[in-house]
Length: 408
Image (cartoon, rainbow, N blue to C red):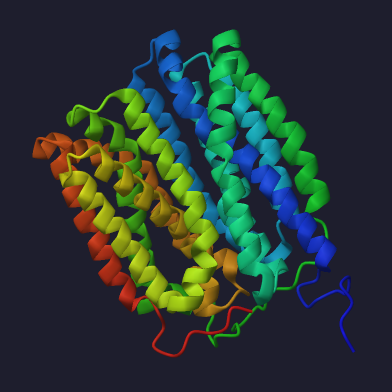
């Protein structure tokens, strides 16, 4: 007898419930990334100019937020495994609202840094890792990848929506009032959405071994997990250093700011294309083949950007790099379930994400420092390409020696 469309699956939610969760998380990821992450690069120069604080100090506060997010994210993952995402993500939204208001009212640099520490704690509870954990546990293997793809495509629109919105508000209101407005938007959209949309039975996490026959402690100390963490950390470091330092690289080639911005924007379109094609690519090449190919693609495009002078080739390399980054996000989202199953996803993904988040926080400094040390951004990009190439090699060891478990 066919199963009705509304029947409850072992995940604890029926089809309508899973669709509600996906839709809600799409909304809150766009808003959370937009307010907590993408508004800052728009506002940072004005903040430094208005307050008299050094630009490096203002950026350092934001870097601290990402480091805090990496550290707290491990605890958040364990909490979600045990109790589900509703309380964690709703509380995170409230905390994020308070943090943004504190940023807006900062009267001194220590206050500003403290506000971003609080924001970093909130980031760990509302951005991709907890959302990925919710989707992974509430969706079965059949529709999990589709939900993750939709979620990351929506999250990729955050800069498209909030960067121009923030710039428009800044011109009319100044940076403090802009952050107040963004805090109101954040609270209005994410707090009720998480509270209402993430309700439903949460499958209990086992206290002992999972379907792969291991406990989380054994996984995170295994050769495969360490190799995966190293590969993803190196890739995140290289990929985000490329994003941040692409405009200076193109300026070094005599390419104007407007054209450089266009190349950077094409990378964003490439990310969407990559995420749309991820399912087909993985069905053809498998998880191991897709991972190696994408990391090698990122290495090749970074090297290409480091050596080509032709604008046409720069555009092609930028677009291909965007495709690689888009797929890499989904590789991060699915790596744990592909290798070790989904029951301890929150815990394992929190540990896996932490060093990559630290690498992302340090990536702007690493890219600029390499350029200063080597004398050019072109040379820096070649080093970053080598880093990504090393990641592609290391990831070959990122599968357990036994056959990977199913993704259910």
